[in-house]
Image (tube, rainbow, N blue to C red; front, side, top):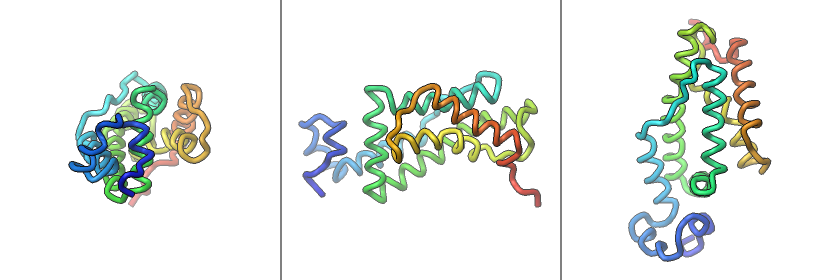
Length: 170
């Protein structure tokens, strides 16, 4: 509802409210626009030389994105806005699809090095590596840290090595 915006109040200075509403119709419109722009930006896909190192580094990037005092509230506000607004949700889904596609390169490299089975679904490995972090952040409210990130990455890696994410053969 216009004028009631707890998400915007948490991340925007008080004096920017009127311009936000004029240009974007509210924080949700601003968030959708920002997510659209960010979808096309390159993501710093880790390249440590091993799939274990890459998945752990990727999961730690997610932790940093939500625990950093400057970026964390903005990232959280984008998720909250997506829950409340279909246009923002669409933008968030596109943002994550782009991030998963970019991050899939670490799985592709691992397959080429023989660390993962041929036919492993790269985007699915990435999703499973970071999903526990989002679950803790937005469902249970549990804290996340480097140890949690490493454990999530290691679980995804174990499943990938076991062939859980291999595409069915035609």
